[in-house]
Length: 308
Image (cartoon, rainbow, N blue to C red; front, side, top):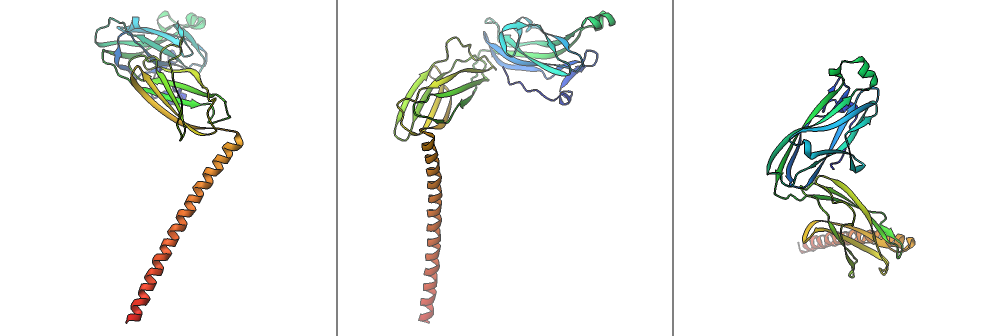
């Protein structure tokens, strides 16, 4: 699922096709999906806009060669397909279009359209002719099917805390943004180490019962809980390697500390003082060097004067 961005209503007029009769619109930029793999699901955000001062019932549909490949879902529910939804007055509404490329689809280009249609309410049905009741706006879709894998995975690693008490588990949120043309179930190899050694080296497989991250999909898995029992107080580095089989997909790293809050504060102050002390020593050494050069040149000048 691509990231969904909600634009201000005025800005949307420059990039949306708006039907004044139906007071609805959607983005008009074509949806072009490169290197779609057979048997894979591809996610795309579809936004409908209702400029009417009243709520509107919007129908989502697909046509052309992609019609049977396409289903629509609420962003918060990717299990139960929908075909219509009510959009509040003067607002927009985003659904997820899922294109399921058949396993037997031949390589090539497949075209069609995504449509948003404003269905007439009872008042409109009474006052308007049958031909003007439903207004539809189309958005072109082109899906290029290929048998070449393209792997591109963006990952957000978000620790709940960076300073832990002794024995306190470390909670880490993992959010995947899959720009590949295949679904992924990354395993995570986590190493916890300090200046002395690697204290922990554990592989966490992709969680059971959690759907794979779909092509062009964005998904957060259940937070990881990393035990820190047995680790001494001090500073550590957490190294996370994301893999698919023997292939490394990405690597992330962050620092954290273990110890009472007073110790953490002491370490921070000590580090700050050490940095300041190093700066003072370096500055003093530079000043002494410059003074020595000046004295040397002065003595040399006096010696030459005496010789004359």
